[in-house]
Image (cartoon, rainbow, N blue to C red; front, side, top):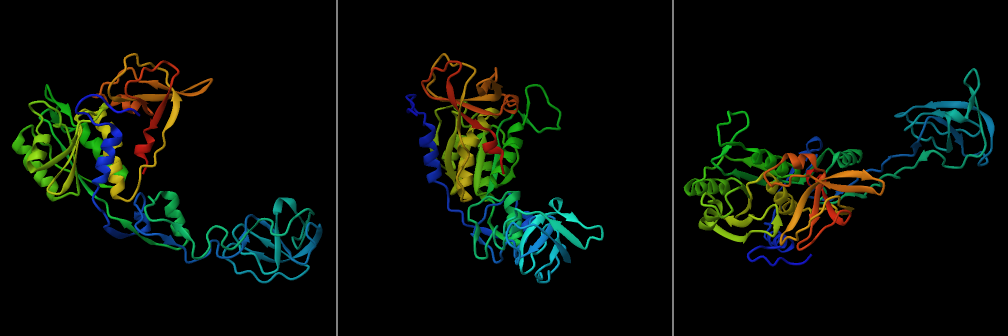
Length: 410
């Protein structure tokens, strides 16, 4: 997309490249029991020491035919044995078949499994008539067809979902080595903030940013460290940043990075360390800062809740994922936009939208109020429509769509 002409603002791609270049090396690991591995990031490739399944087994309840039969022939044979899952089958004799159940091992000399619904059992259950048309190997799950011994089942850097946890269990692993969670200090600034559950005096607001960021950090796989609220005073901000740097690997702040007289975060970072980046060509999300205090990276987010959400998703999330050895793999889509943007802006705009169905397919409907102070509109929305810099958008035009699920999936 084209660059921004507004002096002092950095376009998203440039800003993201700069902060990702500054991601510290993070190679600390720990070994955890498999039930605790959900959402964690593998530190090592994982290999199977067994075949899955470990032996040929039946894909369904039915009857095993002997290998001596002509493929596809029909007939009637006596039942030689009954094989349940977990049994060790005896070799199948010529001229005999076996009753078998799903998951049970195929006996030596077994040629195919026929569904019980296709067979006719004698009243005494000692003989079974089977139809023709079957093929050798039918309904048999072969040894190692899922995973062969020695196969790499998962690669380092993979975040473990419930599916991967089950896969690791299937090859007999009960513990895995994962990357340690970076500790992310969360500092919320503002004299106007009150914790939920407390009385709300006039002129005050409940501190939603703390809880929003704590949840977003957990979604990345990092560990939030919530610190006490910081008053709008320079000395208090300096003290809070020193404390945060002493007990965390990354610092996230909200508020205090704009140009108001009560905005002290930027000045405090500069006094204790340095600012490498300030102000983005984004809407919402312009007052963003990046730097370091005592060697600890600091990402200074705006104070308005929707700006916090957008800048965390676009900047802080990729930063934390890279620390954990991952890339942000969320995909963008192009969809028709039901609204319009009559006046071109100098900043790239991220509009909260909901997906709606039409005869032509899915379309994006914008929320009527795009104020950066609103969080209810983000809850109403499914994601964000991206309006490029300097763009005029008419109803029906195609825009990129960024689903919120990209940011909210473990």
